[in-house]
Image (cartoon, rainbow, N blue to C red; front, side, top):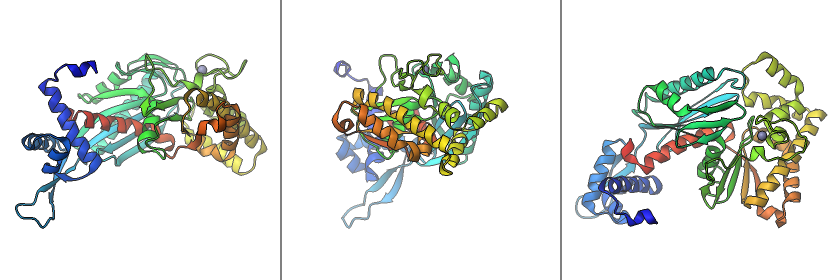
Length: 407
Ligand SMILES: [Zn+2]
């Protein structure tokens, strides 16, 4: 409110107006210059100037004439273009890197995942793999896109968003790593790189394009080696004073529990993360993967659990039920604190949901103070392991809509 009292300078006005026109064409579809002027309240000369600039930047194109039986010259329709602008999103996690590129219409134009072993590999090797994935993605989209709008990198960490740096990533064993500038320097260009927490970007993807898109009070739970939470309250992502909120994986839930990647004992993720599930359900597979230091992605790891659950392996089924109860225990705390409309389980939870979702939901309801858990629905993500990378790409694209002059 205070900043609104200051007269906006001309550059800010121009930037806001460009954003207003682009957003209108994105949200409402093709329309004429006259309609844009009408709906935005800007005068026609200003709209013509803004549209010329957006066309020049490859963000808007003329579609043709409106087919109306009216006298005079029919108006030309404008539409969002953005087919030649790529927004990149990457996720660096403990056992994989995923890259997704979308165009400004939100269409996925490139997607790739590779397995890594960041828990034991030296940090420079993991960062090199990330940089190489970024370069491959840029190269792959450069045939159809002439502009890279920017890059957002999702990491399983406390993130200093302003600095583009990891503050602390327990499962990578990294502290104070300037990921943003490493990626930028690998590209050797002035592409804008930002870094954010994987759960926040996963929640952002769910909020924008997931099954429960637009739900104002939503919690997204990552299902990876770590378990993070992206918390949307009243339609806004909750960040907290330092941007470190949502670290639900480190809620203390079990006195004398197993050790967590953060060094403490009895954290929620030490009970409901992918590793404890493998340890309980398929210890032979975990031992094999650990001993060989092989690069095995999370989907492949959880596939072992799924195969044995399908075959009726009693050890695996019992482990999954216990897992479900511990999951529900933590979820009840989140329900009591945030009263969400829906909790969405991401990552590997999707794959094992058939054998543990009922236990999780029953426990969540039993331990919530509000009747019927405040109406909270427990749901499984349709975006799977790529939610954070997709959220990162959408986040990059949104920056263009906020400031089209930056392209
Ligand atoms: Zn912990």
